[in-house]
Amino acid sequence: MLVVGTGLIGTSVALAQRERDVTVKLADQDAGSVRLARELGAGWEWARDDEPVDLAVIAVPPPYVAQWLLDLQKIEAARFYTDVASVKSLPIAQAVQLGCDLGTYVAGHPMAGRERSGPAAARADLFLGRPWAYCPVEATDPEAVRTVLRLIEICGANPVPIGPDAHDEAVALVSHAPHVAASAVAARLADASEAALGLAGPGVRDVTRVAGGDPRLWSVILSGNARPVADVLQAVADDLAAAASALRAVAHDEGGAISPVTELLRRGVTGRGRIPGKHGGPQSSYVIVLALVGDRPGELARLFQVAKDAGVNIEDVRLEHTPGLPLGAVELSVQPEAAQTLAAALRTHGWHVP
Image 1 (tube, rainbow, N blue to C red):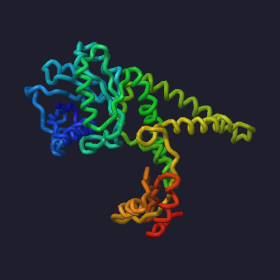
Image 2 (cartoon, rainbow, N blue to C red):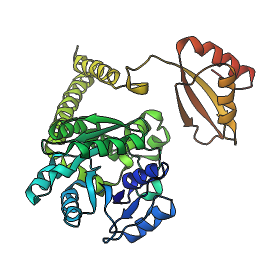
Image 3 (cartoon, helix red, strand yellow):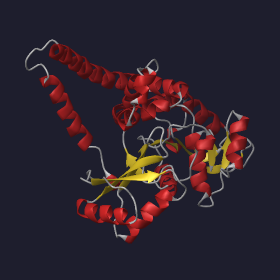
Image 4 (tube, helix red, strand yellow):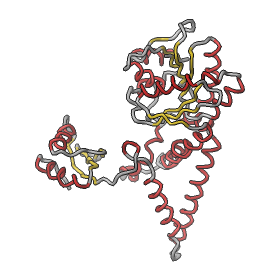
């Protein structure tokens, strides 16, 4: 296999393949990035005169996918080709314009990532259980599709066949526009007072988490999917403008003015409830058991061991540090019938459970 682009996604793909003893060659315009990926065990440096590989994975930003595809096809670097760019219509359209062989190419996009970028942030398990969109076209060779499905399988992801336009509309809604919205909220904090920041809690951290991404990379991504993202952002902006107008009316003590805000909050609850839960199924109603833990080595390991000994499966976990104090609050999501059992077990072993 050849991986072109040794950033977060490309190096993670390479690491996942290496765990299954797949021979991986690495290429990148940044020699330092290739060197670091090699040191991480992601593979070996590629030379243009190397023997052809079965599959080349093009892990570069969307505007550069088609040109790389053409260049690789010209030297017959691989039997088949795929990419991992976060938009699909643009690379496919550009590949057609450049005269690329679409029979050997399957556009792809793993729905996985981190706030950090570069090969140092790569992980072999990055794609485990994550959706991986792939977009064959009419000209695509079935063997090319089978080869890409094998790649997805080795990475531990769930293959999702989808058309290019449908893909771009979908990621605008569930990924690209939310990133811009999170950045808009985070931008308000740039000039916030120290007093305000001192009151920051898990809510604002959750909302702004993805805003830590690389602005240059995200500008390229958003440019490649501009219209669908703009449509979603306009709808969000309309909702926010209506909410702001209603709240101004509330401030002027106009009766019933809060109704549009209440309706938006209700729609938000409905929308969030439709996000797939654990294992991709419907969201489950868990009970949260809160425990205060000290900031000491092995504390979380002890807590999880108590849960195991009590026969309680922890469905999800969240840790919130307490500013200025050497302790934090751990929220343990469990099945409702297990909540009292876990709380009692934790108290017995010395944890404070409110």
